[in-house]
Image (cartoon, rainbow, N blue to C red; front, top):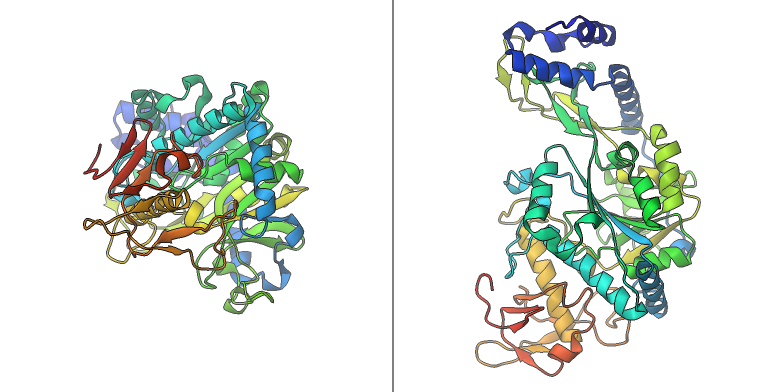
Length: 518
């Protein structure tokens, strides 16, 4: 095989070391390596590295405290502070959905490595009585929302679901959906596309080899979304379908309100081109990014970028001044997304993540380093806030809408299968109580219900009490999204009734004393 052309390109880019084991490779391995090298723009990659390292050096040195301003009240919508507007926003969102103007964009590139599984995170079962996976729960929420919009407005509609996978998760995700008949959704309305990959590099800008003929590659971050949307002509597909508004979210949040009509309606009523859903950050040291203004432009500031003094600042009402915790849950208008993809994306800087990257040494031995030896470059989905002309923020309750799945179960762990499962069952238990149902223990005694604590107040949008159970661990209770999207429509099923755990309510009826599966 003639490698003079790739060899010359590598020499010009200062990456000739990638061919150091060429003579030890089989013809198949040589062909694979050449194919991989041919697909790469080394000048662009070197440029990314240079700019990312420069930006990283600057960020380390300066805190952004003095340039930060909190989210002003006029761009903020809140499920607790704007109760009188919630129904109106929800109506507006359902109207847009009924006109098939709303699409959902799922960031699902992550593998379940930290969960200890070799498959995509969306295929994970957190141990609910039904054993539904994250993909199935989200698909059924989309299906239910289509039904609710149809019932309200009398027109058939659809919510197209665009799913961004990575090279490692694309095939298994597609197979999973196909095997499960797309969970009742139309196959044409579930569109998979792949995010890009970038090579990992050492601190001198040399691409790392993870095998003699294999480059160390990594996904380019959830902000790689915008480049991928362009590469796969997704925005054009949205335009053809008549989409006007897009809801973007991450696969790992078990409580996510997919295409949340109240959020969409709020953004539409505000005339927003870009919106961020947030949860209140209650602890100053919680390692979560906050949505705020920096130099007059909206962005997410990571906890590491501010001093403790700024993190601890409080407003006159006692809340943290910088309390808009980012949960990777966003609204875009189609014209804004089109502008980002076509115009702004090249201006986005890569962020540097220092990593322990396995590599082969000059002898061809695989080395697994015990400290960071290189970087992966990534963009973040929220990097485009700065380009919005009319940016809004929508604050929701964490216990209702945010419980991410990131880690495997452990004694005192957080964001794991147990916390995700308990968060969903606790939410569903509150729905039962709010709809007038009760739980009884094995002796027939009612489990006490107490008003929910905290700044959320104790009234739900319709004026009824927001209740939760009086126990530390949630009662086992699961309500299928096909029965209720957000707690609606349960009164006729549960009002005035008493139930034993474990309780499952699905489209086939009410099931008590459920043991491990139905």
